[in-house]
Image 1 (cartoon, rainbow, N blue to C red):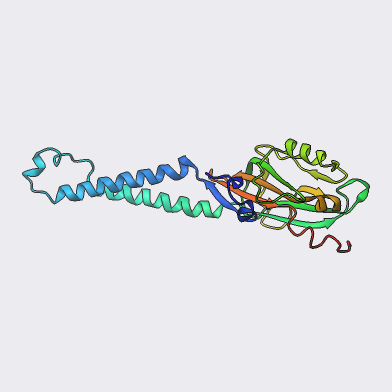
Image 2 (image 1 turned 90 degrees about the horizontal axis):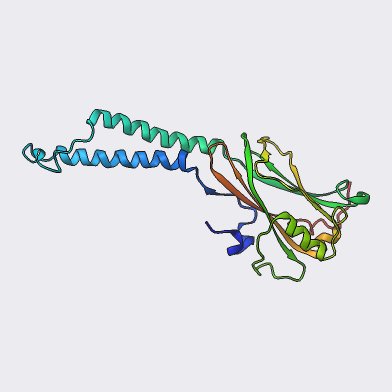
Length: 236
């Protein structure tokens, strides 16, 4: 599996992708189906040999009755298709929204508020939550590493930005549930002042979640996307 920092982060930002399937609930039915198919091919070939040949090795090896084998194949094939359909039904739809608002930073200053949501109908839980920071003047393709929130905050404060005055980034622990709302209610990810928007070229947040069938999904947010377009827009 390739991390986004190994290539161009901009090419993955905004796109949700499934990066892992459940070995138990996805791989096992496929392996069973492949095994039964191989047995079916063996029995078909064996049945077309002469009776005399079937008394000798390896043609005398009889694995399963054709009727039972047909039933097992139908069950295994149905399980694979049902799993695929169910996985699509419970798949999380990870979205985000950003807008200029007040009330998230000190002195009620204007802030670019970014929130995430699970627009699907079922629960997803967070596995990991990483940051990638590009300060103004740095090349976005420089390959800055993904770091945890503490390291990102340390780098931001070293650049002169102040927590709660210029920015706040919410910490999400492993297992935090993103409840499927089926709507547009977002969970706050971060709030950023106008100074932050001017001093930080890009702030990417990469979060990976696991859905109810054990598949892992990833989305990379570009928190600064759209912030500069509305930077001087009047607030309600």
